[in-house]
Image (cartoon, rainbow, N blue to C red; front, side):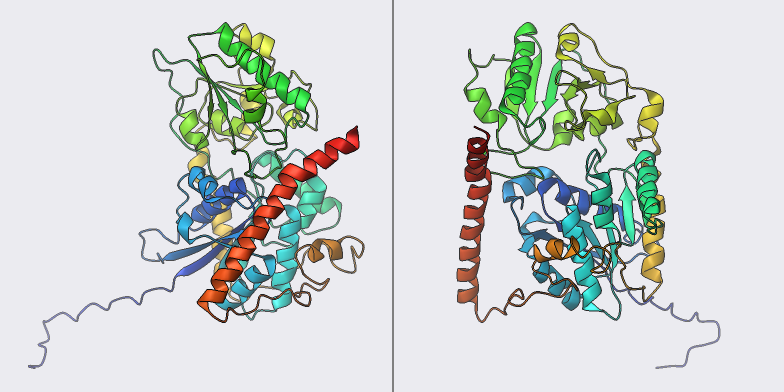
Length: 461
């Protein structure tokens, strides 16, 4: 090969490909899966961008085995979250910890109930990894109950996401009030807000009632709401009235549904009018054709407000903490079926809306900037200090061990004897084990949803 002359340009060096950013999302229900997967996408959007510093992002989806583990249908209905539902796998807490130990994740998003978060935090701490992952957690929606309990169980994560300025202020007050470090609290927004702003469509008049699995809880209250919704349909025969349901009978969601509206509707005297329908599916797609959203306290109200869809929070059963509609005091949205039947449409208070993270003012695009910057800084920091939850065997000896034991962990966060998953000796035995496990899970769900409610009702007699 002839020598290169002085005027020939040196070949450009190809930059070395950056290693993939490895992310794990662990969720325990359909709605938490949606929150966790979308949160992971928003927190890593910059890393996966088109810039010079972009790096591939690999997200592993894992479901914590339990009563609310979502079915394939529920996963499909969650909508597009950027993770193939076919590749999502079920694990126990101990199996998840083994995965963290063996696969070297950079970032872990815990979309779990508080006790699950606490168990995993102690479990990761007990792994004593030379380089542990950044741990992020938060809430899937409106925080209207067990504020202190839920927050302290989440303490110890590197980032505790708050869905609004209002929540961030409350979260910090709780942590500071017990002498705990509040620096992990980071304001963001609900990750699943989106969709086109509301635009009335000529000839369309659709009212949607967003049902909740556990609010209200009693048969009388749920039957009342159903009856009023059906009566509204009869009063307005040209209006399409939809009952948006979260799950089909036999499926679990984040909360237990002991009295499905589907079954109550079958027993309603007089049947159902032709302009009344029960619908499932992705909430965003239902909101695409909604002209008025009605609910008791569903997070769907925040999705609706984000899109500026007329929204109503019912007061028919009172404004009570147990219903969660007390969260909407000051919103301007509180009203009753009588007023809605008469044509009233509530108008939201702009100051209240601004504090709730629904970002109807167009600021949603930057809502995750602070959280993303914090996670990026932690990822770049190298070795992180050990996780330090507020609860320890010394500070809560009568509470923490029970929480950890539910996930087969000892008070020090290590797996209890017999909790470790044995290695599969072969595909056949592995398949048999999975079949037995699925059968046991089905039996467990049947007991929780069918048998336990009957026993509880008998106890009330």
